[in-house]
Image 1 (cartoon, rainbow, N blue to C red):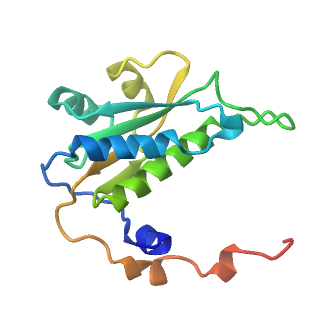
Image 2: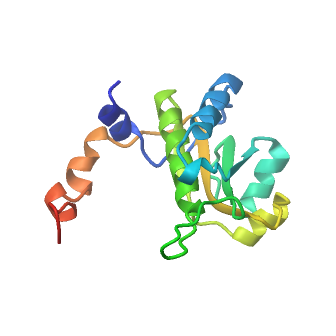
Length: 172
């Protein structure tokens, strides 16, 4: 499958079957996150893999889990993230997003469905999963086999703005 076909196939899955994600597929997803680029190759990402019954119950105290059998809490070690010297921008959240995107697209390539969640209670995640003070939760990636009808790959034709509305040549 070429990249655009894969990217168009991926959708925000909000209903999962109870089928578990195979360990070898999970390892491939985690490897995709490991090789993702990060600012100055600092690799500040920290991933909390949640798939036990107890862990998923804790997850429901932090966010909706949509019945997914696997969640990956994507965090950043804030003291390890690269900082842009010109304005002091710490790019850990960008690094975590790149890692998440790599894992999400890898999951899609393996026939799995995902949901990228930013709507969660950070302090609940910190408490439930015992995050150290320097580790900030950035997002949560739900992974599993979707139940129900997946979104059409053609949805982007009507749901996305045309390039002319989002791209400028050379300058605004």
